[in-house]
Image (tube, rainbow, N blue to C red; front, side):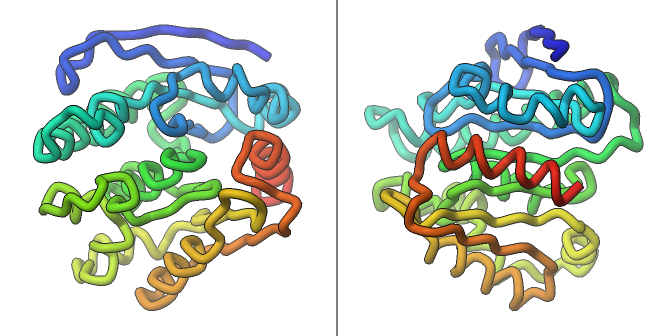
Length: 243
């Protein structure tokens, strides 16, 4: 599997941001890390090995970026208002810098699917819902889509507008909703094992349904916990059966 790492100084984040690229062809799969992890997390925990057949076959070209959660929601010494500002800077980094980089490495017409596990699932859904003109779909693995689960009770406009569970019910912009509705790839996955939250996936799926948005809700059994062995099984299964 061909792999390449590069980085650039992000104007939005005011720091160097690396990105790993795997493969040579296929639609773009943009991976967002869990919690406060880095751009090599998916490789380190064996997920890249698990999806290598799809990458090597030219079905998918994978890009993996750093999170900045340890500079925002997971920095418990930071003033909450500043966490929200930092989170918005991360969103702009993805929209203004990462997406154009993906297009340069593929083509302007190549679809982009954003994917993350755990906290990365929330960020992935949030990015897709905000810019369905740039991002074509989302795979949320074991996600909770309510940002107050991570903001420790703090609530503000900055939390609201990055918490899909809160803002989606009030989303009325017809053009944005129609762009979201055109997606054929909105996948919500949860196991039912330890530390999973299948009811969170069900609740968010209900919101999508209420907005006339097509989605797939996929709940696996109690033998599937909130852990890497689950995600190493799910993602290659999706790449092999949904694309």
